[in-house]
Amino acid sequence: MSVSAEQKKKLHLSHLIEQELRGLSPIQTIMKIAEAQAIHDMGLDPENIISFGGGWCNHTAPEALRNAYQMILNDARLFHQSGRYSPIIGDSSCREQLCRFEETIYGLNSLERNNILLGHSSTQLFHDVLRAVCDPGEPIGFLDPTYANYLNAVKCALPGSPIRFIPALDPRTWTYLPAPDTSLEILKQHCEKGLRVFVIPVPDNPTSQIPSEEFLTSALDIVSDANGYLLLDFAYKALWFRKMPRCYSWSPQEHPHLITLHSNSKWLSSLGRRFGWVEAHETVINGLEKINESILLSPDSLHSMTTTRFLEQTLADGSLKQYVNDTRSLYQKTAAVMMSAIDSQLGWKRLTPAGGLYTCCPTPHQMQLQGFVKRLLKTTGVLLIPGTGFGPSMRYGLRLSYGPLCYEHEKIIEGIERISRYLAKTP
Image (cartoon, rainbow, N blue to C red; front, side, top):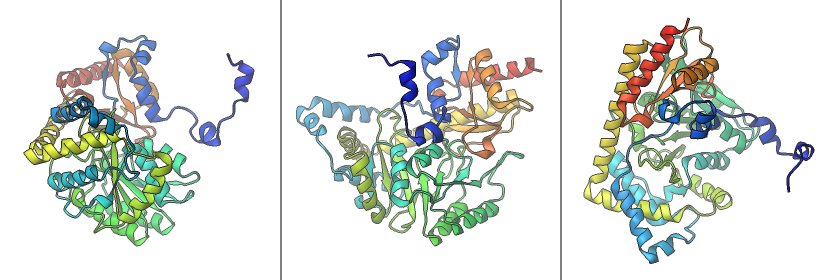
């Protein structure tokens, strides 16, 4: 039965949907514009688009992972088992293998399975962590700029909770944490006023920066003294480029006010195979188990079983460490190609990635941000992501992702050259 226009007017949704989340978010915009149909609707050929917009990796997942899935699918008994509920906290064998993984790859020695809870994804788990450790109305803090999806997640999880930005990027000089002591002092002031959680992706999205050990240690001390939590989002953990950050080996056993989020999405090129986990003190994990019961009920058994078998094999034969190193090297080389092209063709200010998939640049002088991005796409077929939504400091900035083009460096160069030719013709 069709619904009339008059009837549609009477359909009522929550205040959250109709007011707080009204309009397209930056993440919705990114996901929608990447669809082939959206490109067609703009009169463009998807085959001619060079996208620096997607926040996704494109390296090949390890063959051992595919084989692990295949082994389960080909075994009638194991496949049947994968259809059963797992424990609410997640399968114990998988959590034990994740402890081995953290110790072998990152030197995290004192992690136990009771410090781990499995979930659907780091996106879902971020929402659930907020619900487990905060009350609605308590302030949540982020380095500015920060991942755009966090902000709407706070609105969903903690209605009425104000968002506090701690400055990290100076939009005038385009430098990252130019005055860390000042940023830490601002964090301390917010904590004294009730800030409950301070969130930092490491490496960061959108900047691909990694705060110094001194900054992270001081931030953890400040939030601990205020009985809050430092939440490190390790979605890009495997993609560091130079010296491994020491925070990678921080244990929730030693730091009870530390919570870390993890996902298979980026390091295993499993964006669509949604699987993630939280590492935290056992008290926090016990609280999260109560949230899991209502939100998820049971983590995905197929992904858990596969991850367990994959880690067992690749940790034993040493191939996993090689895979991680090769993946890091691939993206480091890809980042260098983009930096060189920006420097030689555009001469823009930009951030040198310390890991991850991105760099950020200020919008060209006197260019209106949204208009520039749309005109550029329609004229050149090059997609950039406007910084609006990533925090106040990115209001006039652009995020460029090299992740989707890790095997197509020539497209990075061509895309930057298209932008250069467009700007040369633009008054």
